[in-house]
Length: 279
Image (cartoon, rainbow, N blue to C red; front, side, top):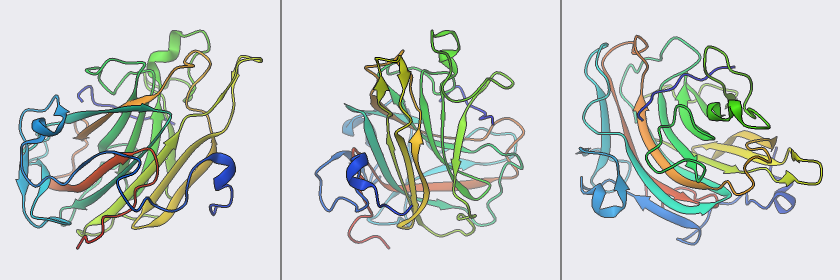
């Protein structure tokens, strides 16, 4: 398996034993930050490493949402910048956002791209790119499916090496895809994901296969893995502490001009669930 990167940027019957909840939070408890994209003043609300934001109407809720545009096949993303937000360091992290793709949206034609949203960890500084890190998580639509993924390219020279598969063409990664194609229209859809770092067996100097990767689409569980390894004993203090929103198609992969919109985004340490009154 292989993930390509941009330099910028089941059912739930084991909940108690794994420490996560099947039900979304009903309030702000466990939410680190939320963003409704009602205006372009993101920097005033803790966002950084972005210079411009295009806020438009026809939102999932409220009066605004953020727009990312590719005006032609050769252009990089326009309209809004990639942007980051720090969060309280945590061994488990969740996200909820609404995503809308433009009419006649086209995919890359490959089993990778577009990239969309990411989590990074305390093992890298706040300005580090997502492409080659000690751990980067991905929440994105690929070929119409919901993909949750991870890479740890920077660990190739660490004592215990890579946890997310071997390097292929300079990249590595493990994919956790929905079984079905889910993104097939130009309507708003609620995307949710939850990740929990695996524990570590220090006596035997190895990771335990108890990390968790979960994904929901419009409230339905579509990705479920409770035996994942995301880190080795090289990183006993690793925690998630950064969110990066960076829509991106690699060179030559954009099929035609198109747009996407994101709204009602929230990040926390438990499943957040949809807002009370989206469209």
